[in-house]
Length: 353
Ligand code: UD1
Ligand code: UDP
Image (cartoon, protein in one colour):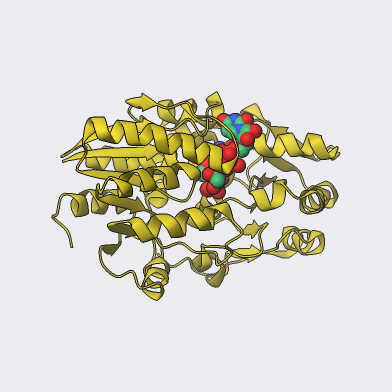
């Protein structure tokens, strides 16, 4: 079977690594990078570190407004699909690259496979929620990471072609955890002690594009009295500078790091403060308490299990959680058994049901 895979943003490179490895055993994969993320430390580094095959096409679309970015991707992807005539198109998650790939495939009546289907925040103001709802509703195979995602789809009347495969990000963590321990020197490089810092990431539009919310988050970091290690997404850096926000000396601002460094920073953090979807899950997989800088999360299991607390951008809740949040409960295996990629390959090959 010939599969065209569409990726373009940081978390999609990480998700594609285990899946590409599994599907290439029995299929031909044509990898298309839309160029949504393009800085070396937002894109190329992951291909090297995770042994992802180099893209067959790099569309180099780059940054722009939602319509501009998605539209340019759609035009370029359609062209590739017409030329390569695949048996299926594979998309991941909920970015503009996902939606462009989904629309291109669906209009050409090429079977569409959505990895990480069924996630919902129930907040349609999020670009990601729009992207994932639209993608799910034109997908032929909906590969869900959790039972909650399967139930979300059922509530929208989608029952055909739905599978709970488990989460491919869990596969990636299991595969790379020990590799990170041997290959990453990030703790020594940054002079960090295990358990001696809080790891923070912020990039969600609802936080960065709103001065009041980003100011409250940075103020909480400034006042928490802990060392904060803060690998800053380029979007966030731009807004911190535009709003003129001052960061105090306890915050260690660093460039975005590669995945192996990130796994080391996560697994040795005392706590993680984030608005990232992927980072919330990784905190759960690694048993690190997570404080989420959003009003809601798609990853509700991490909250119900007691390992994730929803702090919004409320300075007081963030500060209290940094000081007091100390979960010790079990972490049930809501995200599968670490073999999601293999299950996906088997479903694509028609072996599994
Ligand atoms: C995108 C996804 C988001 C995902 C995130 C992962 C959409 C709508 N959003 O958000 O769901 O969680 O990726 O990180 O698809 N920039 C650079 N260099 C880069 C990439 C981006 O400088 O390599 C800057 C540009 O100023 C750009 C801004 O970051 O305008 C935002 O990038 P964009 O890809 O539009 O959205 P993200 O915030 O990265
Ligand atoms: N990540 C990384 N380096 C960083 C920040 C994040 O490798 O500096 C990884 C992180 O471990 C996770 C993924 O990127 O696997 C999450 O991506 P991001 O937070 O950009 O997007 P989201 O998951 O919110 O869509």
